[in-house]
Image 1 (cartoon, rainbow, N blue to C red):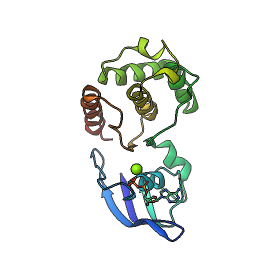
Image 2 (image 1 turned 90 degrees about the vertical axis):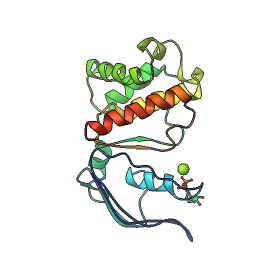
Image 3 (image 1 turned 180 degrees about the vertical axis):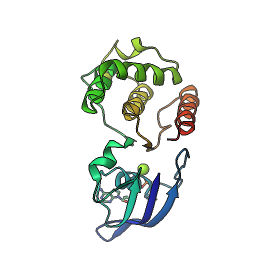
Length: 185
Ligand code: ADP
Ligand code: MG
């Protein structure tokens, strides 16, 4: 599902990622561990097409990162380290907007939103009662996670996924990714 060969990123004279090579089969949950500045976020940004590698290659879900970047974006979900929200929308409005950008019909999107909310023990009403600006950090994180899954991507990248989640939400998140892995993601 993910094939990475000699993937490298330089920022000026600094080497952020140095010839990373790995293979990840379908249905597998893999974590990147390392201290601050190890190059984890840089790796995820390269594999999701957010930044261009200095050298090296990767094939994601069968698509070449260099020559098929748009297809790669269609087939990955990405939860970045921070940001990625419109504060003036409710959670539901934001998720409906993301669904529309991916061309997902509203009814199907609502079904998927409800399915993912259940992992966090949340009902639809929690997404409509206030604007994202007024959400807690953990609640924002849950919305961004759900947004990344709406188009049913075969590959999902999470950068610091447990950041801001309380203990119950962390358990829910782990159940969610296990369920995704069981379905071959
Ligand atoms: P991690 O996510 O493992 O904490 P990062 O991938 O964010 O590490 O960073 C790896 C290295 O690359 C760090 O030394 C960081 O300072 C550097 N770096 C990351 N992004 C940039 C950037 N846009 N410009 C310059 N240096 C960067
Ligand atoms: Mg990071």
